[in-house]
Length: 331
Ligand SMILES: [Mn+2]
Image (tube, rainbow, N blue to C red; front, side):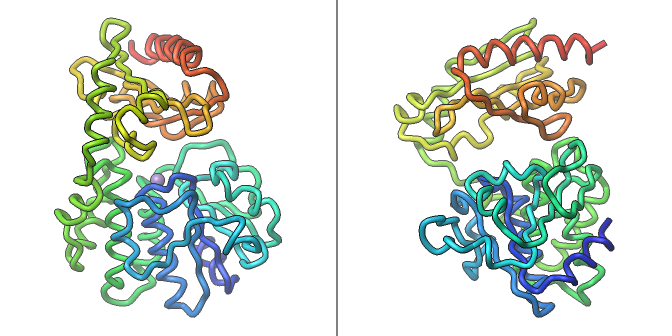
């Protein structure tokens, strides 16, 4: 797959790199590392994200390469710019959010690079997917490492390491493989600082975020004898705490800490009033199967879905589906 991906990159001079909306450390890290690689090979590479680069990922972009999508401003003609448009860390075009319209209108070759579990991607001319990879940054690492003689440029090494940290939960989740540790060791040997990376990525809470966590945990719910635990956050909760949707990041990890929990959920209202769920499974329950019933997906142990429904009704449906899935998967 990577040889095919390398050949694909070789064919194009102007490559637009995008990731799913609300970009995470893996998508951003993979985009920056790939942009650095393409630029050293004499190609033009741009990275456009939507809605913006999260505050805690700014340290990955010291040169200011990342552009926040401005459809009515700088990016009116974005669709006309690239020869190739690559979606990173997702394999469904609609996950690009606001960028989707421009993606549909482009005459560039459209491709995706992803490690999520999916049916065959639709809506792309080329697809590069490997669900055995722990992270999109692992795929980019595998691409660039043998092709760069000597040490990687510091920006690239830092971006790759941060992506591996992001998607493995700092090397704690079930996708933490020997291969990921080898890659991380190589990047540390090249000068990446693990503690600085961890601090920059994670130790960035605001008082508003911690207040929101407290408010959400105050409403902790347990079902099915404590095997399913969830919290929920409405837009009113966010404004009561002065918090933003970015502050919901990692909240789902809190109910997952409970002894005896098999599945943890965070329910929330999106900015446009839809209902969203993030599901995390400890080990046995396939939460990807649950999220697919609601048009979402992700990984077997970490998945999500969004629907145009009131939050309460959605919570009841997801709860029923989780309980059924637990009955199936826990024997
Ligand atoms: Mn990823």
